[in-house]
Image 1 (cartoon, rainbow, N blue to C red):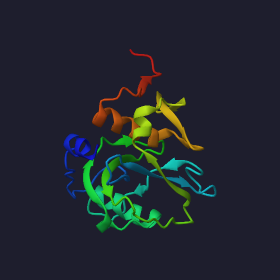
Image 2: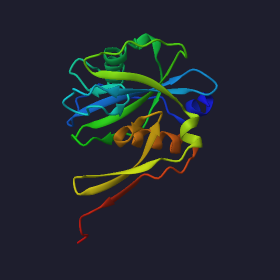
Image 3: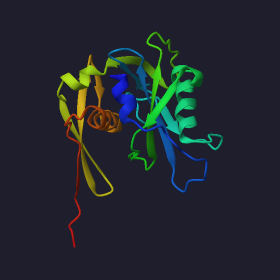
Image 4: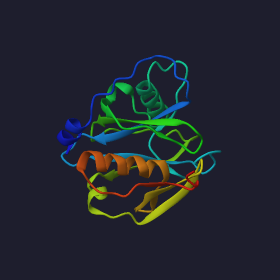
Length: 196
């Protein structure tokens, strides 16, 4: 599976020119195995934003981050104790805008299958893994609908061992599976505004 992922993903190529938009990045960590696991986190219940939500490690781009890759690696180190030297960055997915207006770029990286993690208890309740095959073998348990800037998004929702995966995280997973494995996970977007 990793060979297929490496083939389908282009190496990321980001310059360090100033950006006009607010940016963020998440790391999609995959374990280096025949059947990779996907590493996810659950945000702490006391957080001001995204409390209790399942997410990839990541966050806003800081001024000291030269590229958006640096953002993904720095945030992963801060949140789950994953050192940048322990991540082989193999590509990037299409960015998407969060409900807070951040343009979020998912960076795909490979890590050792026995990699240990240290959760930042101020930000996280839980770190867990999901076999990538789960998203090939299981249909979404529900569809999550959200409206943003006059558009309605319909994104798959999964329940993996009591962890509800929805929102932008589920969108990135579905987009990843569709791009790499040619699945047909439905991601719909329709405008609520009348065409003139």
